[in-house]
Image (cartoon, rainbow, N blue to C red):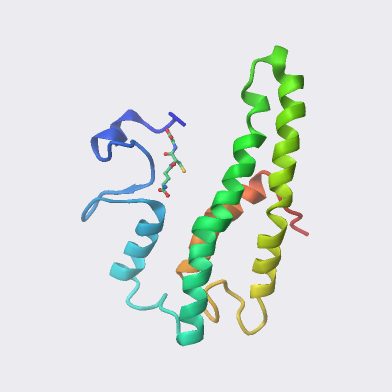
Length: 153
Ligand SMILES: N[C@@H](CCC(=O)N[C@@H](CS)C(=O)NCC(=O)O)C(=O)O
C-alpha cells in the first residue's frame, strides 16, 4: 500500500493501478480485462458454446473473488513479520506464521478444483480455447506461485 505513484490520484481518487486511460478511463483489473477483448479481440475470446460460457462465468467469479480473496489473506498475514520491527519479529512471526499457514491450507481445495477443471478436452480455464478466465486466474496464481503457496511440480 502507498507505493503507487501519486499522479494516479489525478485519474482515480484511490490512486491504484492498473488504470486504462485511452480511449476512456477504465479502472479495476477485472473491468479492464473485460474491456480489452470486448473492444479489440473481435470475438476471439468468446466461449465457443454454452457449456464453455457457463464454465467461464463460474471460473471468472471464482478467480476474482474466492481465489484472489484467499490468496490475499495469506499474503496479508505472511508479510506482517518481515514488516515488523526486528525486536518483536520473533513474537510476531510465531503469531502470524500460524495464521498464514491456516490460510495457506485453505488454498488447497481451490487449487484442487482448478486442477480438476483442466483436461485434454478443456486445456484452458476458459474451456476449449484461451479466454478471459485464464487472464483472471493469472493474478492470484502469479501471487501464489511467487510466494510458494503451492507445489508447482
Ligand atoms: N481492485 C483493484 C485493486 C487495485 C490495487 O490494489 N492495486 C495495487 C496493485 S495490484 C496498487 O495500486 N497498490 C499500490 C498502492 O496501494 O499504493 C483492481 O483489481 O484493479
